[in-house]
Image (cartoon, rainbow, N blue to C red):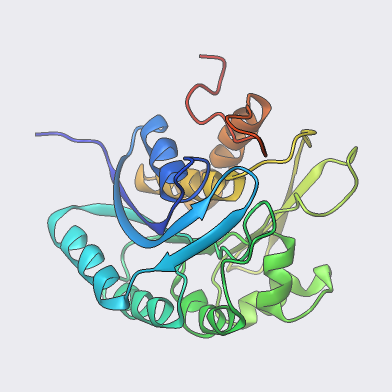
Length: 262
């Protein structure tokens, strides 16, 4: 029996549905992909900020991932918040056992409202163990600076590739003024860089990074090559943000339900 392509998200849970696993699953579904999940952490957050979180053990996370990969024909993996050094190292080891599956790593470190989601030890472990296992990493400016250990934006792509990252998409939402376009930069493993200009929307958004990374994973699961997947995912993201809404008392969320004017 035919079935949709399958993607697995490994990420934390957001009770408000704006980010994390909930954002990933909504994106997968909207793009015609069946979503599997491995929960890394239970967060206490709303559209304003993260109040608290509790990280699952590496053993609990491993069991979720292993049973899913054994049962489902996973065609792409998206990784978000991992929460602990043990989880980072365990996921990196598991990915080494499945090198044929493309992996999109969104190195979540800070929530949209500013709450910290990763210690410096987690950042270090991500840099050393996980970057080389990802097909693509999608850091925003502050995340790229921490991972590359430099505030010089012109060095981020090169530094991260030197750390083992194959392809890097640095998203530009944190750079520039309110009237400036967003510039995303894709640093490819063949040494080329391509810049993408997107319109900047006025509202602050919760879950936009999750949505973009999940969309790229969805298009990879559907068989796209990397750069076409990035291009299509950015178009999806732009529509979702343009039609975004505020479900609570804080930031807006991308409208992952009905983009493209449906």
